[in-house]
Image (tube, rainbow, N blue to C red; front, side, top):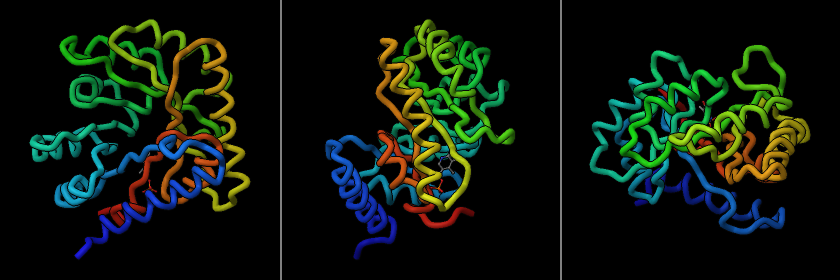
Length: 228
Ligand SMILES: *Cc1c(COP(=O)(O)O)cnc(C)c1O
């Protein structure tokens, strides 16, 4: 019998493929990050057995506990939470990706603390596309300056941009916000900065994100159900 998680994943892959093709994008253009914050180790094992190998976590201690329990699996761990400067050493040594870089001092700490024996740490710059004061992220107008500064740090590999838009069920408004990130991303490419990742789209807005060019969706409840 298929588990709920297996079912959710296969339905999600079908939906992603359908929407991706609907917008004339290559079938493999959009990847899936399973957001496992607040979800059990058993659920991660189930998703992994169903072929999902990239997982996103928001809290360092919770993530490190899970990493230790799941050390026998070849999981690619992504940090997608707010970055406190006293946590950068742990983030830099345990994760393969960090999506939420929005300060140069934090980028410099991650660079300094990322072990030289590991491949460069993949990073995305978090951009605030809604202008809400409560949200992390740099202003879209500052993306090129930050990208140039981060590209100069050899232990970091700038992969692209990430955003968390304001919560709305209005698909036109969702697309408007994602479009801002896409324009900033295209501006980087035009400036010759080799980015390949547009990290946007969650359970409630991933269709709009795909329409606007997302390459990496971050989905939690749509895979695992509600969080504890
Ligand atoms: C929790 C979280 C997600 C996943 O949200 P769902 O609505 O559960 O899909 C995605 N991105 C970030 C940054 C998150 O914190």
